[in-house]
Image 1 (cartoon, rainbow, N blue to C red):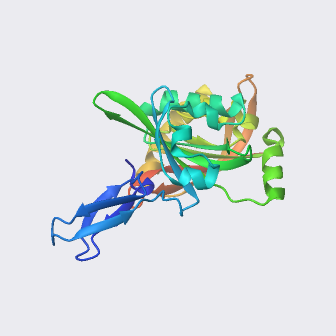
Image 2 (image 1 turned 135 degrees about the vertical axis):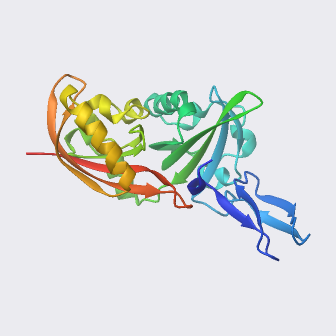
Image 3 (image 1 turned 30 degrees about the vertical axis):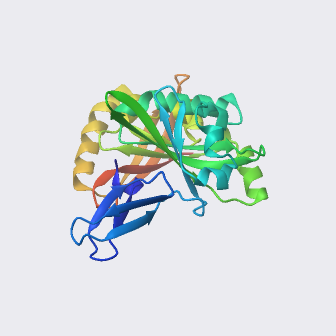
Length: 272
């Protein structure tokens, strides 16, 4: 599990790290192995922490468990969501399909991120950023989703829902150290002709011209090794329809809480 998705829980007596992980429950009790004190922790997804909720599903998307905070954000009790498919939390098939596509690919990656919308019990639309994390237990695959609520005014939410990425000239991509896409915003439709969930998990070199694959791949490896920001002043983005777009991009490294390099965040735009 990547450290930037986890919380640290320490003994309030001696400071020893008890666990670094996730508490789905709102309350847990542990005995410190160093000083013997019984310590009590409130989970990161407690009901009074209203900006995040967690969902645990099996490989087919059936919800096995959820954090108590889901009631505060979406209005559902634990009993109302457990046993349902994750698709029930999405307002349309479009959003549910994006989740399903990413879930089918997450097994071989550190994490995926998706900008999407969940539907609350009162049918309100809740913009969220979801981090997908895959893990196995007893040979079975499970997916943990961290959903962070995006706080917006009614006017901002309306603009968010109506934003036209087809006429937007910027693209943000997060990629790991092998060039695999971990996240792409809606601008990817303009650049490459794919929806974000279709490009996530694929390698950025798939969208270069044949002439660029060799030199760009080698150059990126060298840049990644230096752990420095970089700029590509010109490249041609290969669109799904076979056309090419003249583009430019800058990229900066991003790290987890332990200082480990996770990958690079690229901002691309079209040259005019």
